[in-house]
Figure 1 (tube, rainbow, N blue to C red):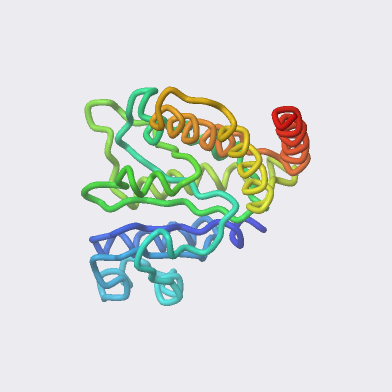
Figure 2 (figure 1 turned 90 degrees about the vertical axis):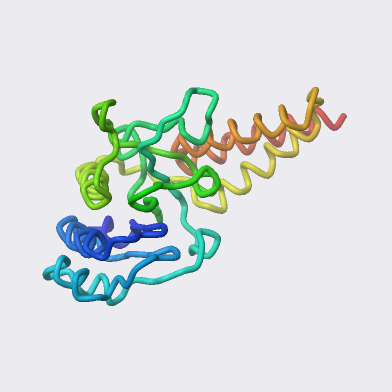
Amino acid sequence: VLFSLMITVVLVRATVPGNIGAIARVMANFNMTRLILVAPECDHQCKEALDRAKHAKKILITAHVVPNLASLPVFDSVIGTTAQLGTEYNILRSPVMLRDAANAVNLNSKIALVFGSEGTGLTNDELSTCDFTTTVHTAKRYPTLNLSHAVAIVLYEFFASANKNPHTSASNVDKKTLWRYFTVILDKISFPTPEKKQTQQKVWKKVFAKSMLTKRESFAIIGMLKKIIEYLSK
């Protein structure tokens, strides 16, 4: 199954060893092995964590530790998670529903699923490093799940959607090329304020990320953007 080779679970500032161990166990349940800990605030190989991991101790032993999200390896899609939703004007916290994200993403590409700490989740700055955000739909009066429970639900949805979407997705290089051409067009447009231009950049970057473009679609859009740039340059 390619799924286990392509998806990486990323835990940011995790504080409870038992949660990390439980997450390793649930990763094994869904045939996943890659775990990255970003600035962990506890020992992920302590007895509590290893005991909770049960037969998935190897995932903890082989987990990578990095100081920040900027230190992550290159992924085709980086998907942040949040329980704190915003209005439609808060772009970072306007998530794609979990099942929609899981059904749309191509599991033959390299994907990082990013989860925040037990107490605060992911900050706006951390979410801004992700391509888009998803959430687990819960009751409004108590929306926040235990971290290991949230990870289990997210992994289940992605695991269940495996093999449902056989298309070849746009690679990270394709997306960067598309965004480079789109940025050229934005630079040629006059905006009333720098802030309005920044808002447009954020919105369109999220649109491209959420669209889960295939390689063929990305080539078609890049071709169109090239023609628009040629037209604007006359």
